[in-house]
Image 1: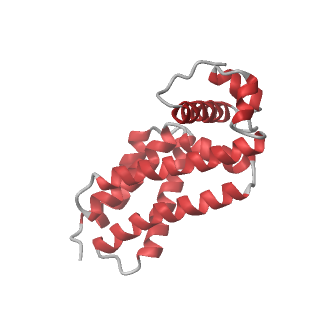
Image 2: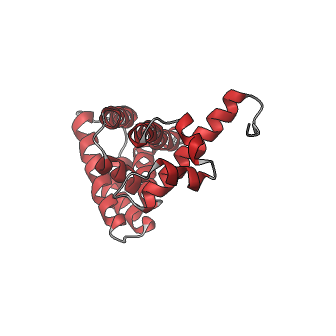
Image 3: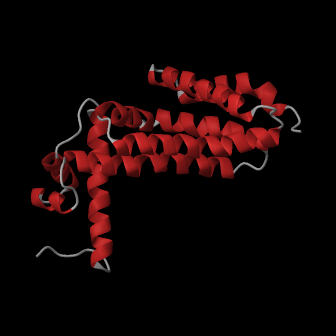
Length: 194
């Protein structure tokens, strides 16, 4: 029996599962055109091939777990940056910049790879939840900033994020993308809220 490297069996299992998901995430970000196989994931995680089956029944099962694990990380990262801002304008700017940072570090490529690699119910559900979870604090910040139509203005802000994301993926440096976002949003965000 393999040695347990945690205080409890439950902690050990959680740690092993997290290592497998991290390995799958890494492999998928390197080769976004295909979902990695269970044996490949086990090897990358440094675990026995047979142990991966204790956590996932199939490649599709692992993919669903990866989707469910990945999207909340994105939302939590953006929310954390928004929470660090004190006023509505800086919260909106933090929303844009946090999303751009994730794109620049490769998380967006992973999210796209997840979206293109499968069409599972977990993917659709997680995508909807992530979108809703990200939109809620953005809309609240826009409302606090004085927007008369925070739903549509949130769509406009999101379109800026999408456009700059494509530019980053096309080679634009993060600091340049951030400067463009500030140039475009600055006049709106610098005005008094209310």
